[in-house]
Image 1 (tube, helix red, strand yellow):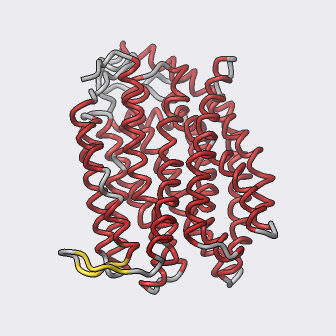
Image 2: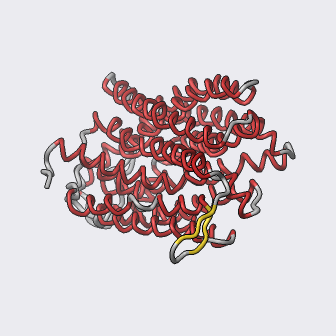
Length: 453
């Protein structure tokens, strides 16, 4: 058993949580490469598949995140993750068993509810494992699960389609005949077994740190008062990064179809190319964003995490405008590489900013609110909004590149405006947090928080 107090334990915890996050993203995003096979075998429209990718998952993921975030502030975060991982893997298997749109939607809801256990608990534990000057990098490493998991989903999906084709079916024991895309959902649940065993046997629940760790519970009314006192910082942060999530998830969910429909790429090759790009370029962008936020913080920029988001927009915009207009698939993919880097940059910094805004025993709930916003805006709207624009504004599924341009550029510009407005509000909220925590040991249980003057 690894020592609770060692730096090795801290990084081991991050790597183990990263593995679980990768597992969750395999379940969550494998559907984006399988849009064609699902449509072909089930007779769904783009909008129906967009609903399965986005709202069916995101709405319940975010709703469940609120009580689960509260639970992460009070109960064992380690066991919360173990139970959630088993639940979402069973839901993924159920998706492979589904035969109707309703059954598939219910399975996606189950995946969303299960995965809602992970990130509030993971963010809270990682924040307890690392000092503040290393937190951006630690959370960036954890957030690599987004890129690695999404990349593996595309890569493995591409390899499987290359081996067996898009419409192949097989006779399986117990469950009968299944399409290859359904079997994929059985396979992505397999890593749950070793990851759950490792979490149960090799990782300690970290001690909660900060001044309130041994003081008292913070009730929902007190949390709401704290939130209202800092509403400007929370709203500009959450909505700003939410629009970045909308842009990134809209692009990632439909980029395979853009290359296949507009540039005539083979589906198997597209999955491999996009998957490898996400795994290598996306990881580099995530780590760079975390490093940059920590670097600016050491230089005295206490709002550095928001500045990373603004820098990411500045890097993304020229390539995001050029890619949908590119005349060839090769040129479009050349633009996709720096877009991937820029789109990945903010997420370690965004998570670290949430942890900085609140005391320890508010982190689970603050993370749940953050995830509610970025997932309702990003995952709920991004994958769904783009096909709606393609279907109902342009009236042609072959105009998906113009829909991508309209949706993503608008979201990126809106995000930059909100994050710039949030800089001063974020700085004031950090001062409020410090005064609140210095006053808190003298409060009696049930009284309100420190009132800003």
